[in-house]
Length: 508
Ligand code: FAD
Ligand code: SF4
Image (cartoon, rainbow, N blue to C red; front, side):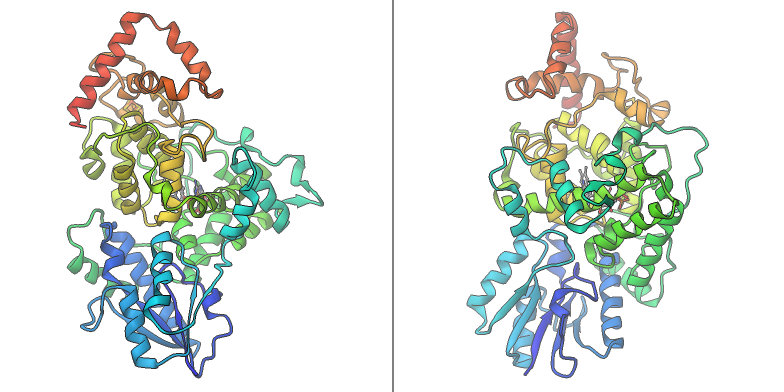
């Protein structure tokens, strides 16, 4: 009596629900390297290598546990290339009594699995993905009847439910959120520890060759390759973060420094999102460090909020609103993504830095994504579909469930304020305050208009003016319209002209 247990490329957790209670004698785990998954958008080369290597290591670890794994390699002659066909093939081979799979992370795969009921004459058991702290149903229940969904209130519920950083029924230290103590501008001579670096083994070496052969035209650098690809190494990356960087995580969470891609961030999202790490363990380790006086409460709370707050919240928003969420375009933005998002060859140093680092590492930290790359896309009025595709391609942690709400909701405000209470629009002043990028830029951040002025400066006002009807009544932005109204007419005309010329020069 064989069950087929399907494990997808982002379900690489030994505790995954599809493997719970597995009968090692009879059941078979099915894992497949699917060309369709790597090409439905043209993912960054490093991201493909990372996932393939992590999958192969995971399969090996399952076999070491005496679990039977039927693994299809990318260039196997009998690889059918799609999930449905791989399952069909396995059904013919093993004649199972049941298919077991953990609820997938993405909508398109869930729809695919729903179809299996029509395709295969077999019971299909879809088990909850208990690596997340809230199921989509629990999130829907929390959201039900609320006028506005706000992450902060959701986060408090999660803290209470899982007893994280709590002191009885009260938040540790008396406050839920310590951001007021975080987010300092960068200072000179910061000693930033290196990110975790693993040595590629033979499995990773094979995968790198494979990626070079099959995906030569995809975006991004494959070398050097240093991501952890096993649970053990990912755990070491977590421990290293807690030991070396957590202490400064809060202080420099929003800071950006030229040629410092990693700052004091954790660099754990790739491992969390493919299952090598579990969110609860990351939060609990950080809390433990606080209780041992190894890191301040402001840093620990800030880190924990990102993981059990933002991460769970965006997933809840995703499942509550798909598939409509993909179509949102509140500002009717239709601009094309400028070519420099692929080459990093604009005159704007901040964008070049973030794009160059993205190309090298398949990583950029949150504030680079939000306040540089995202801010520009918002101000320039770029079509949300194109922006979403870019963000889905270029980051090793990008899966639609987490990428889409961050892009459509957080950076583009394309959902009209459903996820965020106001657009994260900012002029060059913010970037100058939180980074040293402006020092090396061809534009002058202090100049408001004219050919040498920082484009963020006039684009910011132009964005507000263009979208006045849609934003003016937002209490969190109304103040900015008061400031705009005080600008004299000649300068307003200049803002419009500069913006028009600049956007035309990008052929948007
Ligand atoms: P840290 O700064 O160390 O944060 C710790 C963890 O908190 C992260 O590993 C991540 O799991 C979680 N986290 C923090 N912020 C968010 C958030 N807004 N949403 C979800 N989780 C969060 N994150 C992804 O995992 N995949 C994506 O595709 C992705 N796309 C993004 C696109 C945009 C435009 C923006 C603004 C943010 C995006 N994020 C995405 C969220 C965040 O930027 C990354 O999770 C973070 O930069 C990963 O680096 P880190 O592990 O060093 O994070
Ligand atoms: Fe970016 Fe403007 Fe600063 Fe140049 S001057 S780095 S474009 S914010």
